[in-house]
Image (cartoon, rainbow, N blue to C red; front, side, top):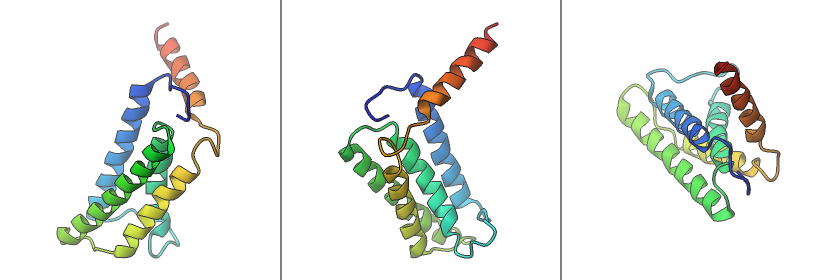
Amino acid sequence: MSGEQPDYPRLWWGIGWALVLAVIVMSLAPKAPEIPGDRGNWSGHLIAYGTLGGWFARLIPGASGRLRLVVILAAMGVLMEILQGLSGYRTYDPLDMLANTCGALLGVALSPPRVPSGLPLLARFVARVVAWSRR
């Protein structure tokens, strides 16, 4: 989180892993989610992996940690494409691997400190929900 510790680290990591699971499920589902007007589904790949890169970049400090994050997400994208090719109902496309990697790079590049982190705002919201639920 760019030098500051999140108020709810388990929640933030849990949301991150839920996002990873969602990308895996969408990647291996028999029918790919479609975005109207996006013939190659590049925007879907950029959004999915950009979201993962941007989310985890808020949790992983330092340039070396973020570089490892991009490598891990790129490897995940390659693995998803290989599994799609082996599935028999989805297709293997090396350009999708490139789109996944570009999305991860973009998500990390557009994360704090370059842009404000939304986690403090989300932490305040969670704190209010928790306080309200305890009434």
